[in-house]
Image (cartoon, rainbow, N blue to C red; front, side):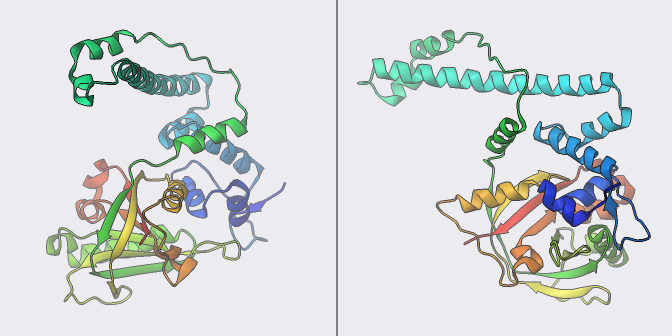
Length: 325
């Protein structure tokens, strides 16, 4: 039986090791530990399962529903999930088709009456009614089968970000927790969680924020990468080991919100910045060692940590920050 390391799988499928570890954390994927291997590896069954996960994600199936498909493993569940997503996609197609037809008819009416003002076109009831009344049910025929190449093209087109915000982070002081090894995000997060509870950080600083980043970043040469977690603290606050007090200089960032687990959207944010006519990437001098200065802000994290198990009702939300200038 052929076994693959996490770095090999990451490279072969163009997914981050962070994503693979998250899939394991939520029970979607499993790896194995063998005595003659230094690190956890993936067998053929895990590779097959990962292929299915990637395909379903490209079809925009949510992780929660993918878990349900694998958990139930019956045709009825798969049909229900697919039909629900088909219905949602159909609603989007109908809405977009409606907008397209109305816009086309506005253009046609403006060609007919090119000598009148834009205000008149938009406020004229007859023109508005003519545009809307021209709508008809549009049948969109899709081929029953689509190649992976076509699916990738469709996925790439739909992945173009339209909701990127430009945010300036001010200077602030942080307490940093750090771990390098297996599951670094979870362990570094636990270190910081313990600190927050011990000092009752939410009561001291209710606007405290939590940021994280790979340190060092995963690579083919590093099986166990690291993760560093920051929580903002009052400037005069004293802290003790294992936490470390640091000062963040602030800066300008392109920011995109994701749901927990959608880390592939880092690539979408990078492409947005790379194609921007107004901004350009402004990486940290430390480079890949700290994700080029990129940050992940776990929204509501300090508040949820303060609530304990009562904070589970708040869904995992993250803001991805890419430094720009």
